[in-house]
Length: 597
Image (cartoon, rainbow, N blue to C red; front, side):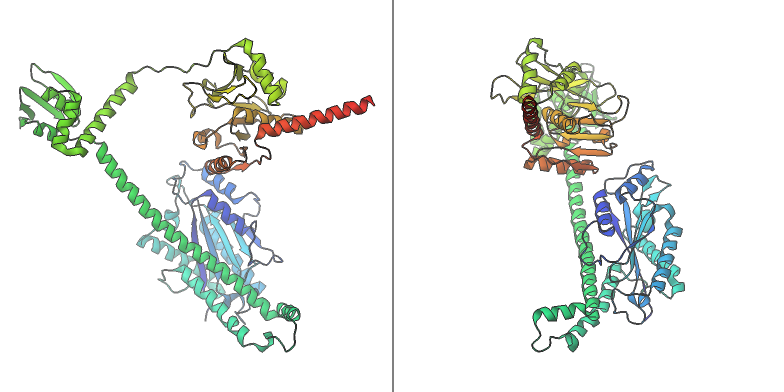
């Protein structure tokens, strides 16, 4: 039997998928079926040691359009050949092959990838630590014409055209390997996974039978268990079988993963269809009743392009109407307005009338449309009340400052620095007022977080009325130059925790950060200004160790994939700062005592 080509592709739709695949291929994750004594070879992309996720992001950033939420960001391609090629004398000798044959196949495969995909193929890894040599190649499906990523344009989507493209892809790879004596599989096969599965079953079936029938692998009379295990493990045939079993498990895992993805895709399709149906229903419900139907129910008759009757001459233009009758001369819009106008009734009576004629659903549609029109008018005409910060009470500042320095352990010089910048002050209730600003070039105060400081057990905290929590945050910068863009971002749950984290770094390192660092307080992930922060390469999530802190950290990771978690060993970062401050004070007292002695 002639050796056959093996080619399969896998869609990586999220950067998490890309990172997970990269971890497996680069062996950053434990791989039970891999032989750690053998080294893999990078055929393409060897000059770039960055994580695959970073490379893909950089490649996509050159496009005119950002990828859609369901776009394929990267395509993983699996290339190999059946074992008859690598070990022609005995295909069952898993884990062994002819180096010269392997190298010829690897070079031909690499050249084929380069000729077909060029710079779009950002990495290709030759695996030699498993049963049979194979290549994992990563291709970013850039479409220069549309300025987008498009897996379907490069490899084909679902349906007949997709199968044709995949078939041509198999033809192309087989043509590249034909000089080596490797042939294409059965043309028209609808399941490349099945061919791979059958190949490994064929490789593994014969040696497994040999284990049972081979007397050399059976225990001898009076042989101890330890001696038997040592003898079996040193047997060459046992080692080959061991590799084959591991490889079978590996392929089975990939097949099961593919089946799970297929099932998940079908469920996702059904879920999306249900969403579309619900949206269509909601869209229908949001539309007002057709005014021509309402006019007919009102007893008006259509004549010369107008609706006449009851001393009305009404022209209807879509959702609007105008009464040309001399004593009326009124224009408006919507079913409820039309009923109120013709029947000379109030809003409640108009809704009841519509319910009698069009049922509950019809009355609701008209009421929703009426409310939407009223809301739009209010939004357009009603004046906005600008946010007002709490009035500063300078006589209370010393008490607030003492609370922050003595009870919260924040260095006095930093408290004063924040006060001078106008980021924290005292109000007439002796609350610490932490000013919340937007992230624009000229930040404006659009909110304030209040922390009570009066009394021993004061637990008051909250936001000033009118605070826009989705548009403003308490934040400050440290390190670098004021004109520098932030290269590092630290996220904490509250203003005091944010300050505490920054001061912990200062006390431990003894200096401000070298790189421009943005310290920002945020208590809910859904208020994170992702578009303004996603360009910052170094993101640290410094929430506390509570269940909510863990959940918020996971949510931030989904929004900013480059984020890393900072573990807090105390209740929160302020408690950790207090503990460190007390420790430093004890050390200082101890040093003073030694000097006195």
